[in-house]
Length: 88
Image 1: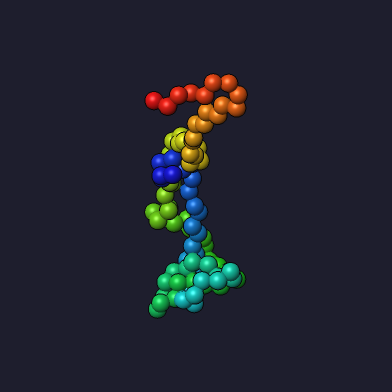
Image 2: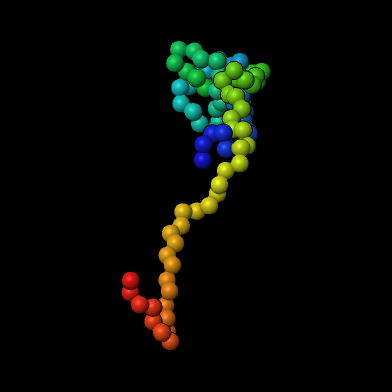
């Protein structure tokens, strides 16, 4: 599947205007304003949130694509009774 075949979608990336206090992401911190190598701030100190629209854009155009799994086909002709086909 290529990008054009993916359903149209986007991912919301939110950030805060609070100053970052830790360099490591975790469940209790969020993306914040960078300061001296720190990019994340505790959620309890969250300032105003803003969508980072310039960094996150819509992807995919919902173009149809073939969803068939790979297959291998073999044709067998088996004669149980009667006249067998001649070679040649």
